[in-house]
Length: 209
Image (tube, rainbow, N blue to C red; front, side, top):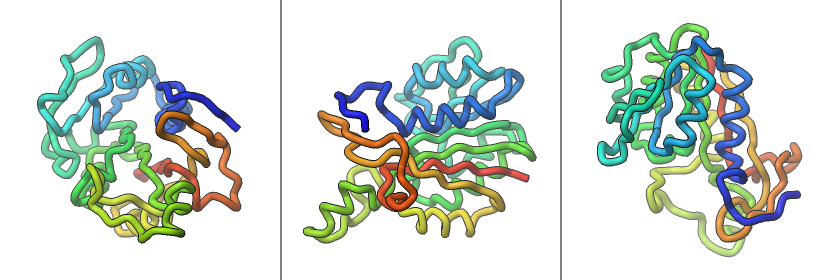
């Protein structure tokens, strides 16, 4: 069990996605980051590949280009209009899809811009994470949209979305279990299989055949 105060080092949604990225990325790869306003994380991606294209919805949050990173303002739901179809080796979207109005269109646009053999990594909160599930034993289930989230997903929710999409192969991984957010973090890094449905996040690997 890990106990501590929040820092970038303890954000396991990012740590888990970057580990999967590191296992797959090659120095020659073209990488797409959707939601690219955290320049430190974008540069971490860029350090492992040939170049990164960072897409950010809000123009005022688009950073200046640097080194091997090019940024563009654009909408994930219209991705193939700003990124050449079949041009991306790996795509990364950390904590973005829950903000997107048409998540199925977003996934299908992602499919279009990936090369055959390409891979996408998506992380998103679990709608029934442990703390939320405990709260909802005493209160009504949270209604969406809530705050900036159009929706959140159980594993079954995301599976249904994937089955409706153009992707034919995927993996869904649970990420951390416990309190992961707020003034103090108390969580297990590895999620016991029996508690999988209460994980804090889902990390989804998508493969284009």
